[in-house]
Each structure stands twice: as structure tokens, then as C-alpha cells.
Figure 1 (cartoon, rainbow, N blue to C red):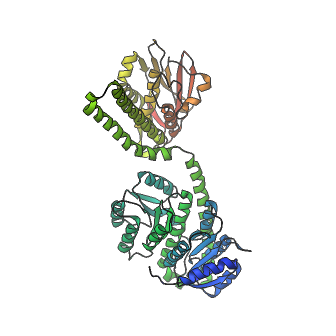
Figure 2 (figure 1 turned 120 degrees about the vertical axis):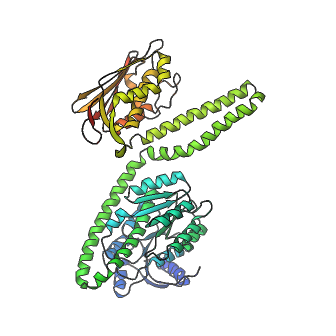
Figure 3 (figure 1 turned 90 degrees about the horizontal axis):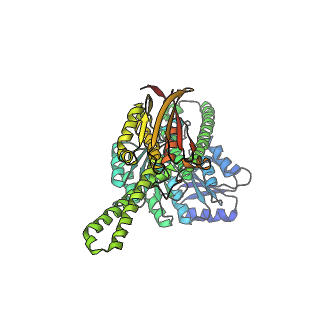
Length: 546
């Protein structure tokens, strides 16, 4: 693909490395000015403004990161694209370079052709006019579209990018993505390379052709599980601004998105007020720009630190992975069950007893697996209460609905369930139903042999909150196990009773999502009392007695 050469400032202290990179860039038609350190580079920038800076991070004296910060604080140089070179191939170094102001980050050992296509991509984004500061508000409003045929990756990308406070839309395939682009504007589009019907390169070309009049262009980022030179070259030739492997840590992906959006927003802001800038005196504009840029850098650093802390906490949670993976497991599980049943109906007469037993094991296994997936989804969702779903719910009415759904188990066990004078609370009715369903079902399931279950439910006001209890006369729980039962997949009676070991873990998450606490008091052979609280005031408060 033909391209126009640019003026490149190469900052590299190693003569060997500098000559290798210089020859590579000259062969690509670029004019290269080489200096050995950052201090000389700053003096060179006072005389001449290049189109792109290719910068070694490990320099004598001022480092590459410090140099980036210096030029980003200067209104005359902050819009120059910077490609950071380093011998350190780590996510931490990668994010530090992008956070300091670099637009792209490449390891020195990278294939030379990859270095060339990344320089060409930055040249396309080179902006000749001076940039202006304070685009933080645009970061808070940035609109991002993710196009991918994997529902799991779309879910993860949405959760990660929304933590950056972007407005995120997802499209399950190229047709839906292109339709969304026709109906609403986006600042950044992430496109999977390998998709049916249209691949990522074709989608990029269509986006560039359709949005050719938009200035600056939409930021296009190609996502791929391929890490070879051919796929990367195809992406950049199609108009992508960056090429990111799906195996890359998402914290690095977010840093690269932020770096590209920063350039887009700086250019947009520059054009919007360029006429006003020309009317100001240079000295006044420089002083204001440097002050506001310093404030912007501080805000961005704080936000990056906060995002990293949130990411660390999010990585410790099961819900991100359980919620995404469970949906993908449902479909093959459904097929196993359906075809097992078809096999039994069509060929049942040709099978012996052992064959029928094999089919029964398949059907029973899919049923247990389906229940486990449902419980995993419930566990993942249990702490994600939505304010719009919170209403005044009479607890007595919820328990009546629960008992109706458990009627076969109540009749089979000969159980007695009593409750009276229960309050109404502000909560999500579905989650409150699930909470009482799990607690009452456990009381009926873990009963003593030949002893009819007796369950008593109470709710009273205590110390500014509602205190509920669900008491039974069942097996009871040993003191050593009373903390363990609230952990996921912990079961004490696996041989005697069916279950997934998630019921009480779900209850604990639901109660905590409403701002309450859940605990148990129990004696082996006498029964258990599960206690939990709900606040009387605030968003998840209880309202009044019903």
C-alpha cells in the first residue's frame, strides 16, 4: 500500500539501534532526524516540529516517560504523536508509557514491518495545529462501540469499559455494528478481526468509507486472537488506528483506548476554538494552557489509579466470569438433553436395560448441570440490585408465593410453616422471593428422619432495622461448619440431598446487596435459626408493617 513519508524525530542513545531504525524509516520514505537524548530532542522541537516522534524510553538523563510529560505540558508540542520504544516487555511498563502521554508503545524486538505500520498509523493522525487543554469532560462522555460475535467477550468488554465511565454499546456481529453506526455517533469502535460474513478489516474499510467526512475520524481499534504480522498489517491497511491482541490484559487495552481518545478529543477541541486562540496573545495562552494541562494530567493520573484499584477488586469477584460463561454453556447443554431424549424415544426399543440407564444418566446429568448454571447466574446477579426494581414489598405476600411454589415438598414432608405480623420492605421482589425460597426450602430439605418439619418465620423492628428469622426443627449444623455454609459450593449433606452448594451463598449476597447481614444459630439434632437484617431507612429501607 502506498503512503506519503513524514518528518520523524528519532530519540535513541544507542548508535546501533538508532542506525537500524533510521534505515528502516528512510526505506519507507520518511525524513529522519536523530538525536541521542531527550534534552537535545527538546532543543530540536524549538526549531522544528516533526510529524511523529519515535522515542526510546530508557535514555540517559531525562527518561522517555519524562520527555512525554514535558511535551504534553507545552501547548506547541502536545499534539505531536509519540511512539515509545522499550526493551521491557511488561504490562506495567506499557501502561506507564501510555499514561505519560505516549500514543503507542512498541517493544524493540518487534518485527520491523510491525514498527513500520504503527508509524504509518500515527502519521495518519498527525495534527499540524496546536492542541488546547482540558478535554476531561469528553473522556467522561466518550461513546464506544464493541463489535464481536462472542457474547462472552462483549459482556467482559462492556463491564471493563463502563468502569472507565464510557458510554458503551455492543453489537453481536458486523451487520448489527454497521447498523448502529448509521443511527448514532461513536468516538471509538473496537472490531473483532475474525467474524462471519464480514471480517474486521472489511468492517474497518466500510466505517472509514461511510464516515470519511467526519473530522477527526472515529478511532478504530482491531481486536484479534492472531498475533502475526499479516493480520496486523491487514488491520492497519484497512484504516485501524491500533491492533490489540485479545490475550492482552484489559488494563493495557483500556490504556491504549484512552491514549487514542485523548488525541481525538484534543484535535476536536483545537478546531472548535481555533479562532478564539488566534485572537489571544501567545504569552497568555501559553500560561493558561500549561496550567490547565497540569490539572488535566493530575485528574487523569487519579482516574487511572482509581480504575486500577477497581480492576483489582473486580478480578477477585466470581460474577464477571460466571455470568458470561453460564450463558454460553446453556446452549450445548440443551442440545445434549434434547438429543438424549430423542435417542430414548426413537431407539428405546433397541436398547437393553444398561442402554436405558446410560440415557437416564445423560438426562439427569444435564438437569443437574442446568440447575448449577442457573444457581451460578443467580449467585452472579445476587449483589447487583438495580434501583429501578426497588418497590414496597409485603413480606407476607412473598412467603405465600414461596409456599405455593414449594407446595409439593410441603405436602410430601408434612411440614407446618407459620408466620404473622411481617412488615413491608423496600426491595426487589424477585430477589426477596429467592431469599425466602432458599431458606424455607433448606428447612424442608434438611429435616430429621420421621420428624415432620416445623418452620417459623418472624420479623421485628430492632435497633433501627428489621430483624428477620427463619427457624426450623431440622438436622442442625455443627458449630465448626456454621461459617462454611455461606461459601459457594459448600455442602454438608451431599450424599443425602441434591443441590449445588450455592443456595446460602446466594442468600448472603442478596441480603448484603440490600445493606443487611445474614448469620445462623444452630444445634445439631435440634434445628437452626437463620437471621438476617434489612435497614429501615435509605434506598433499601423498610417502610412499614403490613
